[in-house]
Image 1 (cartoon, one colour):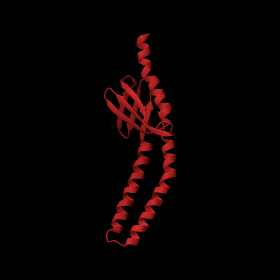
Image 2 (image 1 turned 45 degrees about the vertical axis):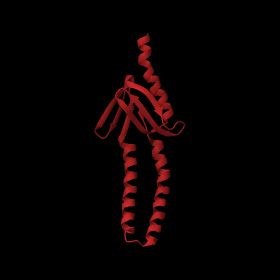
Image 3 (image 1 turned 90 degrees about the vertical axis):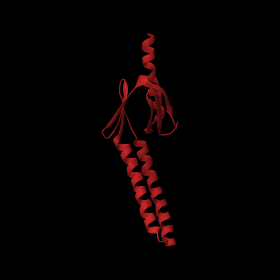
Length: 140
């Protein structure tokens, strides 16, 4: 099962126009001040705004998380990381009851955060069930 970030992308579609409007209003005010560095400030702020938006979209599209039978495969461009369900100590959802959220996995090898995951509550519940399976098999 692949985890998605479609709800975060939908959120971005709704929020980015408001952010761009804020930039435009700020630009209008700075231009009205006629300061010598006003144009430079606007160029820097505009560049940072574009970089932020491209960064979020790239992360949402290129960062892949797949829940396999015995492990989680996390990949971003050419980087891959495998996390065994048995290595997971705790699963936390930083924004419960939201459409998307961040899952924090504390494992025997460190901490991994999965950002902007759709239906994070359901993913947390699924991961907790997967974590418990090996203990049940050992008891049987």
